[in-house]
Amino acid sequence: MKTLITGIHHITAIAGNPQKNVDFYTGILGLRMVKKTINFDAPDVYHFYFGDELGTPGTVFTTFPFDGARKGTKGTGELTYTAFSIPQASLSFWIDRLAKYNIPTSTPLSRFGEKLIRFEDHDGMGIELIANDRDSRKGWTYGNIPLEHSIRGFYGATLNLKAKELTEKLLTQFMDYKFMAEENGRFRYGTKGEPGDIVDIVLDNNGRQGIQSAGTVHHIAFRTANTSSQLEIQKILMENGYHVTEVKDRNYFKSIYFREPGGVLFEIATDEPGFAIDEDEAHLGELLKLPEWAEPQRDKITSRLAKVNLNLESFA
Image (cartoon, rainbow, N blue to C red; front, side):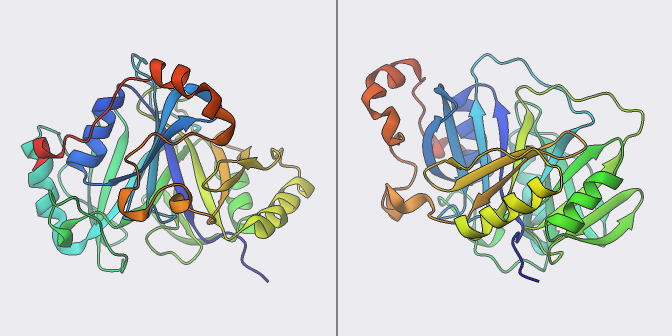
């Protein structure tokens, strides 16, 4: 059978102050700002994309920063921890780097035979760095982090749910995922079980529903090759009772959305066309890029957006 979904495309979170958001993900974590645009559904709000050199699907963490937004709370029906992949020998480097910027981290934890640390960004966004020797992807650096220690992209994501059966059915019957393993109540799924495609389900039968705001994930997007494969998966999902949106043009990919049975918003996004369609690869993320329909309102839009800068010299 043809594979339609190949892993995680991007993960999108709600954030607070835009400059603090840029500082954390570019300055401290060292991700590249590959695109600075607007939330297409709320044009007065930025949409930042952070990833590897080209914003390769599977590396891109994106944010909607609402300045002044109150903090959300982790709970059920949410993606509570986004895990990034780092080289196996880099864990101590990251423990030291995060301590340098007064970011508390967990002690090193062990999961499925791999070491990791867990921490939060300035908004309370849950993050994990998982050290492994299974990721051959090339990292990115602005020069402030040695390339050999740089983040490679996503490792995976944790869904915090009250029940797993219906979500498991969705993943394994309709989204090309397979059950991989279980450890201490954590159920792991993957298309191949490699960094960049892993989804974990953790059950919290009596947990409170999460409250979405700054520091929480808005949605997780899964990869599909192109618009043809996207329409195929859309058809499969709709035929099996999922309420899927029409295809939405996000300039850098096409998207469809639906909620999985546990309440998490899922997106399926195309790998094509990518982030270099309106900027040279060497200058990705430098200018505010607007969709064609928003260009007539550029002056109005920019007047409402706070100015942000890359302050990389502060995070050497």
